[in-house]
Image (cartoon, rainbow, N blue to C red; front, side, top):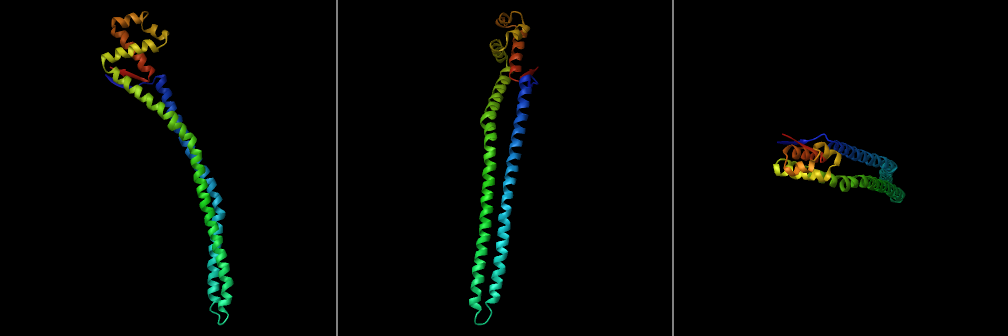
Length: 201
């Protein structure tokens, strides 16, 4: 006897749910990445500020070095250039700080956007999916042995709607008590289909 997944309403519903969850996670990740990239654009002014400040500081330092070689007054003329170069370096440092702040903000916002949708998947869908897999695996194991099929038939008697039970046999309970193989197998199949699993002999 082989056990295989059945295209019952339960199995189809489970497959559709899985596909929706995959799409949900994909869209959530893409949205978080989009937001991250959008916020990262705020770092462009900081990059320009760092570049401008660094370039200005280098130019002022070079100019101060050249002026410092002037005899007698070189040291006095160098001081303003050194102060200006220091201010330019401070401006470049401010640009770097702004970029770091934007990077941290972009990461924090991306993570914050992902927390809710991924939390729904991990704490909502995943436990239900694992529970369904365990139940289906247990039912498949029961279906592999005669006593297990009898137990599945009993579960069908308690779980299945009356209209389905009467399709198996007009007096389905009596047929099950007699141990009628056809009735037991039909009831077991009903229960397996309810769980999204069926057997092939």
